[in-house]
Amino acid sequence: MSKARLRFFENSVNQRHITDADRYLYRQDPPRYKLVVIGTGTMGQEHMRVAALLGRASVLGIYDAHTHSMDAAEQAYRLISSEPLRRYDSLESACNDPEADVLMICTPNHTHLDVLKTVLASGKPIFLEKPMATTLADAAALMEAAQSHSAFVQIGLQYRYKAQYREAFHEVQARHSLGRVHTISMSEYRPPFLDKVGQWNKFNRNTGGTLVEKCCHYFDLINLMADSTAVRVYASGGQAVNFLDFKKAGESADIDDHAFVCIDYANGVRASFTLNMFCPDFTEEMIVVGEQGRLITSERFDFHAQVPTQTSINVELGENGASRRTELSYPKLIEQSGHHGATYYEHIALMDQLDGKAADCATVEQGLWSMIVASAAQASMASGLAINIEHFLQEQHLQHFMTGNSK
Image 1 (spheres, helix red, strand yellow):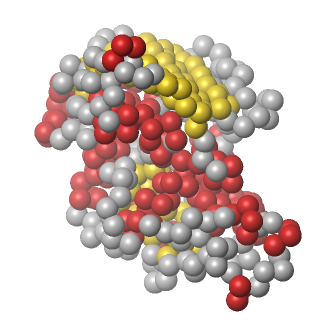
Image 2: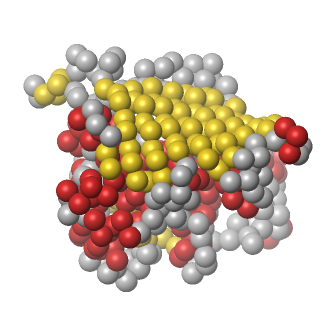
C-alpha cells in the first residue's frame, strides 16, 4: 500500500522552507505512467486534474477535434502543473505516441465506437468514459472488439467509487448486514444537462437518451447491488420542462428530463430508479432493504449555497442489531477534484491495473449491462410496454449476451 500523503502540510505556505533533501512525509514518488487524454471537455479536464493530484501518472499529451477545447484544457492544466504538455494534431498521432502508457477516451458518446477503433490499433491499455456507446449494437461491437484487445479496457463508471456506495457494498456484500436483499431503490434529483460543445447532449441521437447518457451510472450500481441479471424493465418518463424551446441548426432538443424505472432481476430482487432533472440542486439516494434491515445512502450538494457535499449512510437493523448513522467524506482536496472524489479512486484502480494488480474496475461487460438496462428503459418509455430483456436482446440479435451477467 502506498504511503499516505499529508497534503495539507506539504502544500502549506509555512512549509516551503523544506527542501527536497528533507522531504520524507511530503515526498512524492515520480509518476510511473504517462496518459494521453483524447477529448478535453469537462470530463477530459477532470481526468487531467485528478491525474496531477494523484501523482502516479503524468499527462503526456492531449487531443481534441476542437482547438478551443485544447486551449482551455491546457490553460487550466498550467495552473496545477508545470510539466510539458504535448498537443497532437490528429487522433492517430495521439494514439501512436510511443511514450504513452494509457489512452483515455473522453469524447462525446456518439463518437466512442469510431474513436475506439483507432485507439485499439495502438495495442495500449484504454480508459473509455461512460456510456460505452449510444446504441446496443455499437456497444456490442465495442465489446467484441475489446475482447481481442491485447491490453485491458476500463469503463468510466466512477459512481461505484463514491464514498457512500463503497460503504454500502461493504455493508451488504461483505458484512451481510441486511441479510438477503429483496429491494433496491435509487433516485437522482438534479438541474438540467449543462452546456456542451455543439450542444451534443441535447439530442437523443448523440447521447442514446438520458437514461443511457446520465443514468448508466445508476444502473451499474443497481446491477452490482442486485448481484444478478436484469430480466424485465418498465419505464415511464419524458420531456416536461427542460429545453422545450431549444433548437440547434433548426433541430429541436428531444432529451428526456424525468423518468421512473422498475427492474426485475433473475434472483428475485426488484429495483426502482427515479430521475428528475429540473431541480434546483443535486440530491442522490439509495435504499436497500433485506430480510434483516434497511440501508440508506444520501448525498446532497447545494451548489447555490456553496456548501460542501453532505453524504451519509444509515444502517437500520431494529431488533436484529445495532443501528447507526455515519457521515462520510473523502479528504477535501480529493472531493473537490471531481465527482466528489470518485474520479480520484477510479484513477487509483486504473493505476493498479497498469501495475498488474487486482483492481475493482468497471469491465466492458459491466458497461454493456448498464447500457442494456438503460436502453431497455428507453424502449419502454417509447412504447409504453414492459421490456423482456431476453426478447429485447433477441430482437437486436444480441441474445448471446444473456449468458453473461452484471457481476
